[in-house]
Every structure is written in structure tokens, then in C-alpha cells.
Image 1 (cartoon, helix red, strand yellow):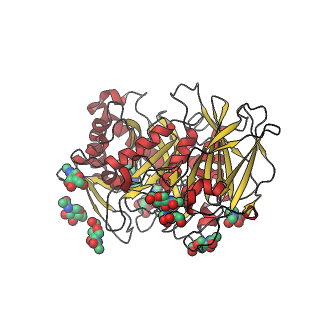
Image 2 (cartoon, protein in one colour; image 1 turned 90 degrees about the horizontal axis):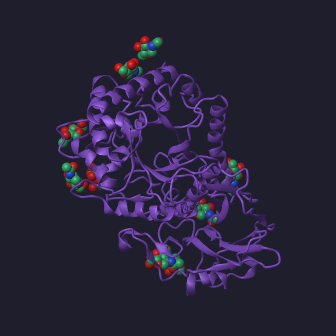
Image 3 (tube, helix red, strand yellow; image 1 turned 30 degrees about the vertical axis):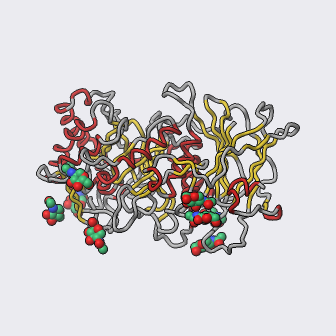
Length: 536
Ligand SMILES: *[C@@H]1O[C@H](CO)[C@@H](O)[C@H](O)[C@H]1NC(C)=O
Ligand SMILES: *[C@@H]1O[C@H](CO)[C@@H](O)[C@H](O)[C@H]1NC(C)=O
Ligand SMILES: *[C@@H]1O[C@H](CO)[C@@H](O)[C@H](O)[C@H]1NC(C)=O
Ligand SMILES: *[C@@H]1O[C@H](CO)[C@@H](O)[C@H](O)[C@H]1NC(C)=O
Ligand SMILES: *[C@@H]1O[C@H](CO)[C@@H](O)[C@H](O)[C@H]1NC(C)=O
Ligand SMILES: *[C@@H]1O[C@H](CO)[C@@H](O)[C@H](O)[C@H]1NC(C)=O
Ligand SMILES: *[C@@H]1O[C@H](CO)[C@@H](O)[C@H](O)[C@H]1NC(C)=O
Ligand SMILES: *[C@@H]1O[C@H](CO)[C@@H](O)[C@H](O)[C@H]1NC(C)=O
Ligand SMILES: *[C@@H]1O[C@H](CO)[C@@H](O)[C@H](O)[C@H]1NC(C)=O
């Protein structure tokens, strides 16, 4: 009955024998936020990072704004209450040189020895900056090129600072950024940007001198943006922990000498696209793998705080996604990766990582959407976007930034690697529970008579007045699905209404589960490879 409720008449009801009692004991939910809840998230929590060279594809320009992308951003704003911040940066930010005579926004040339996914010879022209004006009410961070040195790098810094500040004045600037992943500058062959003897101290000296240079340019072109309260950075934007520059030493060397670092931004990928042993089940649809990946940031944040470094500077992931090298086909673009995205991002929120920027690029396998048609990828909303939607739905409910209705997330204990649950507290009061089943379910290989197994989750709600809870589901035919995904019966697909929400007629909505009057226990059944939010 339950399964037929979900799928309409299309699928037969699961027999009771397929119901696996994955977590037999009910998880108790407290009405008030427990002590181990994550710190209040920053608004907007669900944010994006867009590859510098792909930004004109994502945003368009003034003659041809990309309205599809804007619609997808607006959908997230409707759910979480704030439009995602857009960090424009990534590998190509450190290749970009300014050409005042370029007639187009960008001229990118792919150098296969470096990457076939993005250009590594990049020129931007004056109209590149139009792309910051196509999406209403959107804040951006601008990534300056630190990688190029010498005259051409310096000329670009001097020329782009005034153009960037003019493009981002009047409330469009989130933060500045100087350089992307400088902890890989001397090691990422064949494109090493610095000699092997480049130290944390050299990096800090260069960062401080280049950010001073930019500030002088901005003071001339946009004086109001050079005030200390306005001139703020995300930094150090390291690829990770354990690379060729140590973040702790970097802060010790005085990265924040001028007190202009507003957010401590680090990057994260849970694994690599071509790394041996990476699979959907083992690497992505695996809560333990997510916990291990986030733990290094939790440890770093603690060390920095204890040492009085980066104290009171919120920790964010300024660039992140599933598998580095732009994702693995069949994994990073699957519904399983969307479930991973929900687990990873909510786990970050529960561990006081205050905001996450999912990285995007044209033709990238892990992208939430493809903004333009290319000969590699069809334009469209991709599976990972539906994960972004569920995270946004879990984090909505705070109308302003005044701390009165803080959103805090708690990770609820479940037994297996293949499941995860979270609770959201608004202003200290329980509001929602999210549950994920990440047991891989392939529908493409399944026989037509196969029944999708279901797992059951129980939550104990002591002293709650609610008699029934509404259920919103994140659903697709299986973890290997790359299309046909829905959130609470909504599709955001491009081919339906250009990314605007459309209620699908083949998904039943309006489902509720009742709270047992005697025990205070509520039970939720989840088909393998699916997720749901219970609204209190
Ligand atoms: C604006 O975008 C369109 C479509 O990508 C492109 O053809 C055109 O060259 C762009 N205009 C400028 C000034 O870059
Ligand atoms: C684009 O860049 C390539 C590589 O540097 C160059 O050969 C080409 O002439 C440039 N095109 C334009 C229109 O500037
Ligand atoms: C890069 O340029 C800056 C500013 O001129 C200089 O201080 C620094 O030493 C240079 N770094 C390298 C590795 O060339
Ligand atoms: C660092 O390496 C560069 C290039 O190999 C060299 O020119 C420079 O002298 C070295 N600097 C120091 C301080 O050893
Ligand atoms: C999940 O990841 C952990 C840590 O890497 C590993 O020990 C475990 O076997 C994985 N679980 C599954 C279901 O693959
Ligand atoms: C695909 O598009 C790229 C970029 O526009 C172009 O350089 C390439 O030649 C195209 N490839 C094919 C097979 O059409
Ligand atoms: C699902 O398909 C993938 C790719 O073919 C395979 O590696 C995996 O073992 C399958 N999983 C299940 C649960 O059948
Ligand atoms: C999902 O399964 C239903 C029922 O079998 C089928 O009609 C639909 O085409 C499938 N969707 C996709 C995207 O494969
Ligand atoms: C519901 O309809 C959508 C749009 O036609 C399709 O992609 C999806 O696979 C369908 N889902 C099911 C479960 O039939």
C-alpha cells in the first residue's frame, strides 16, 4: 500500500518480507536543540562555485542572459529563503589574463596536456563582467588571478580590480578571493605555478602584497568598496589539508594580518574521478565515507580555534563536490550522487561548516545543471540539483539574518553506512527530520518483476503534540537514474518549464505518517536509494 501510494499504479506493492528493519530501535528526537547541534548556518547555506571560464555559459551576458540558471537559483531561494551565493573561481581563475581588445567575454583554449575539461589558456575581455549583471538579487565572490606572475599577471590584477568592483558595486559583492588552491601551485604538474621552494611564508607575503595592490585599485575606482567593513576576503581557498602548504602554518604566518578575511574557505572532494576503488556505494552513498571526509575540516577548525588563529572566522567549504577532476560519468551525475549531496551537505551543517559552495562547470559530470547545449552534454537540470533542493528544503524557515531564528542541524545516529538522518532546529525548536536510505538500487539492470526493497525508520517524539507529520520525498527510479527525479512530486527539469517547478502527475503527494498516540513513535518507510523530510 505504501509503495503504491508513492508510485501510483505503476509499481506493485512491496510484500512485507522486503521490508528490512534497518534501525529497529527508534531514535529519540528532542524538542529543543541539543548541545551537539552544529553552529547556526550562514544564509544562504546552499551556494555554488562556478568555474571562472564557464561563468559566461552559466550566467550569459546582457544580450543573452541565462534565464534557466536564474530560475534554478530562484527555486533554491524559495526553499531556503536566500538566493545562493555564487563564488566565481576555480582552476581557470589562475589562468585568466585580461585582454582589453577581446570582443567576446572569454577566449578559452584547451591544452589537453593540462585538462580536456576546461581551457588553460584563458583571456577575458571587458564584456566578461556583464555576466555578473544577468541574475537579479545575486551576490558573487570574485576570484582574482594569483597564479600568473610577472608582468602579465600584474597587469591583469591592476586591470581587473576596477572592472570587478564596478560590476559588483551596489550590493552584488559577497567577498573577494585571491587565488584558487595555492597549496597545489608547486605540485600540480605539468602546470606548476611556483617553484618547489615556495613556502607558506612566501605565499602569505604574496597574498598580502597582491590584496593591498587590489585594494589601492579599488580605492581609486570604487572608493566606498575599499572601506574596511566592505573590503573582505574568503581565504585561503586551499584544495585540502595535507598538500604542499599547511593551513595552520599559513595562518601562523599572518594571512589575516589586515583583518580582512571574513570566511575561512577550504575546498573538498570526497574522492577522485579516476581514483582506483571509487564506486557509488563505497565512496558516495556511504555516510562513513562522508564523516571521514568532513572530519579533517572539523579537526583543522578546532586546531585553528585552540591556537587563537582564524578565531571567530566562520569555516566554509568555498568549493566542493563529489569527485575531483570534474566527476565520474555514471557516478557523479546519478541520483545516488544527489543522495550523497544531501548527506554530505547536511553533515557539514551539523559539524559547524557554515556554508557550502557546490562546484559547477560546463560539461562537468558532477554539475547540478548544464547551462547551455554543447556537443558533449545536453542542456538541462541534472540529478545532483535535486539533492541541492532537498538540502534547501531542510534549511528554510529563517526569514532574516538577525540570529533570532537560527537554523541548526543535528546528525541523528543510525546504525549503517548506507543510511543517515538529520534534524533541523529553528530558533532552538525542532522543525524537520531528514532521512536517507543509501542502499544502492539499480533499476536499469533489474528484472521487470523485481520489487524495490524498503527500509523502515522509527523516531521517538516524546511530549510532542503533533498527531501526524507531512512527508516530502526525494525520489527516482533507482540510484543509477539520471532523469525522472522528483522532490515532493515537483520536477525542475528544463524541458518542462525551463527549470520552473512543475507538479508531476505520476507521483502521489500529500502523504502523512501518524505519530503513535501511546508510544510517541513515528515510522517512515523509505524505498532503497531515496530520501524524505518529515515536517513537524
Ligand atoms: C553574449 O553571449 C552570446 C551567446 O553566448 C555570444 O554569442 C556573444 O558573443 C556574447 N556577447 C559578448 C559581447 O560577449
Ligand atoms: C584566442 O586565444 C588563442 C590562444 O591564445 C589565440 O590563438 C586566438 O587568436 C585568440 N582569439 C581571439 C579572438 O583573440
Ligand atoms: C610573484 O610576484 C610577486 C610580486 O611581484 C613577487 O613578490 C613574488 O616573489 C613572485 N613570486 C614568484 C614565485 O615568482
Ligand atoms: C627557489 O627556487 C627558484 C627556482 O628554482 C630559485 O631561482 C630561487 O633562488 C630559490 N629561492 C631560494 C630562497 O632558495
Ligand atoms: C564505507 O566507507 C568506509 C570507510 O571508507 C568503509 O570502511 C566501508 O566499507 C564503506 N561501506 C560500504 C557499504 O561500502
Ligand atoms: C565540440 O565543440 C567544441 C567547442 O565548441 C569544438 O572545439 C569541437 O570541435 C566540437 N567537436 C565536435 C566533434 O564537433
Ligand atoms: C549497480 O550497477 C553498478 C554498475 O553496473 C554495479 O557496479 C553495482 O554493483 C550494481 N549494484 C547493485 C546493488 O546491483
Ligand atoms: C521510471 O519507472 C517508470 C515505471 O516503470 C517508467 O514508466 C519510467 O519511464 C521510468 N523513468 C525513467 C526515467 O526511466
Ligand atoms: C514520472 O514522469 C516523469 C516525467 O514524464 C518521468 O521522467 C518519470 O520517470 C516518471 N516517474 C515514474 C515513477 O513513473
